[in-house]
Length: 478
Ligand code: BG6
Image (cartoon, rainbow, N blue to C red; front, side, top):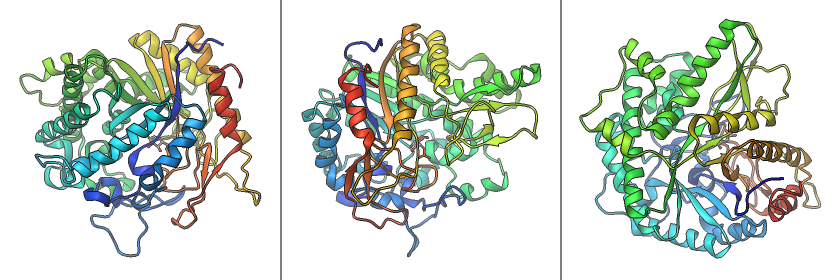
C-alpha cells in the first residue's frame, strides 16, 4: 500500500444537510430551507415561502447545531485528521448583502472549528454548498447579477480572515459544474427558483443567462482564490467538481464522439477554467456558436488567470455510459443519469458502483492537471437496518469503501498526487437529491425517519471500527 505519510482521511458534510438550526441565532433562510422532502420516485419541491404542515428536512436536519461536540468526538474516535464541512452563508450574512456579518453565526463556527482541531482534525471548508441565502435569490436572481460577485467575496473575506490561522483547506463552490445544467441553476447559482417546477416538463429556457451567471460565479471564485492567498499564502484552495466519469457505451465512433463531448462540456469545463484560468477551446467555441458566450467585463480574463486553484477536488460515486442509441437502458446517478453499463451493478437508487472508474479518473485528472487532488465525496447510500440490539451490519458499505480505497491506492502507485479522502456523510444526514433520511451513507447511524420523527440518537455501525482501522493503518488494513 502506498498512501503517503500524512494522507488526509476523514468525512464530508454540508451545513444544510446536517446542521439544522435553520433560523437559530439570526440565521437567514437559505435556498435549501425551502426544499421539501421527496423520495426516489417523488421529486423534492421548492416552495417560495414556508408552507404550513409541510416538512422541510434542513430545518432540523440531524441537529448537529446542538450536538456538534459529541458528534465531533465520534469523528475523532475514528481517527479523522480532516473534516469537510460547509459554512452556511446565511448564518454569516443572513440576507446576503449586509455590510456587517452576524456575530452569532461566526461564533457557532468558531466553536465547531475549535472542537475539530481539539479532536485532531484539520477543517476543509466549502464556502458555498447549494445553500445560497434566499435574500440573494430574491433580490438579485443569484449570480445572474454581477453584484453578487462582491457579496460572495465579502462573505469569503469575512470567514477566511476570521479562520486564517485555523483553516488551511478551502473550496469555493461545491460541484460547481452542476451550474452548467438547467436544474443546477438554483443550487449552484441561486437563480430562477420558480423554474424548478417546470424543468421536469423539459423546459430549458435560461441557457444564456445561466452561462452568464456561471461565468460571474467563476469570476467570484477566482477573486476569492486570489484574496485567500493574500490573507494567508499557505492556504490550499480548490475547485470542487462533480466528476461524472463516463464511458462510451460501445466502441462505435458515434458513441465515442458523443462521450468525448459530454466529458468536455459537463465534466471537465468548469474545472478547466478554475485550474487553467481560462475557458477551454471546446467550450468557448460551443458557447460562441450558440450565441451564448458570456459577456466578459474588461478585467475578467485577468481575474480568472490570477485566481487559479491550488488543488483539484471532486466527488465520485458512480459512472454512466454515453451513447447515441436512445433505446439503450437508462441508469440513474448523481445529479444526472446516463446509459446503463452492463458490467456494473447499481444500488437501490440506481447509482452504478464502479471502483475501477475511480482509479481511471485519478489517472486521467493527474495527466490533465498535474495538481494535488482530493476525493472529497464518495460513498454508498443504503437503507441500513437498525437491529433491536442497537447494531447495524453494513458490510456492503465496507465492501464499497474497501474497493474504492484500493482503487485510490492503485492510482497513487501509478503516479496520482492524491492527498486526501473525505467520504460523504460519515454520520447519516439528509440526502440532497431526495431529501430522505433513508438513503444513509454514515459510519454513524442517526435514529431519524424520513418525516423527521425519531430520537436522533447516534449508533455506531459495523463500518465505524472498520474505518477507524483503515485510518490507523494508513490504508493498509482494509
Ligand atoms: C453530491 C452533493 O452531489 O452528492 C451532496 O455534493 C450530496 O450534497 C451527495 O448529498 C450525495 O447525493 P444524495 O442525493 O445521495 O444525497
